[in-house]
Image (tube, rainbow, N blue to C red):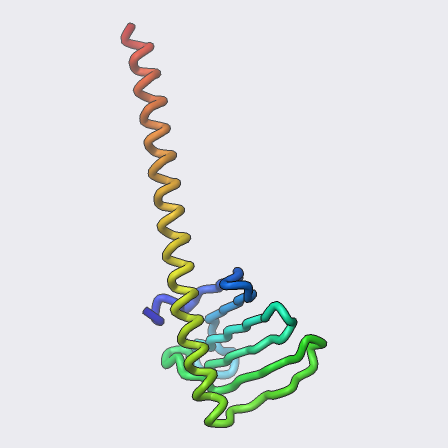
Length: 131
């Protein structure tokens, strides 16, 4: 599941939270090394940023918390905080995948509807031509 998140960008709202996810190549590490960054902005303005520097493992390396004014109130990798944050990170990745899949399904349904409309239009034109 998580492998399908590599290389994507997600920027949308999930359950009143603004969710931003980006998986991109690291400029510090060698080729094919991904960095995963998830940012959650809560309605009260608090922002939590989850960072996974080894993007292939989806294990958090750093957490940053900012208050509503943008001031950093925590930035680090304390094991207890990372353990709690990892659960949240995994849950948001699951929600992102669900949203991504739902959008793809909606687009496929829309495309199929457009194809059916085009077929009907062509059938009507053929009917007119045959008369």
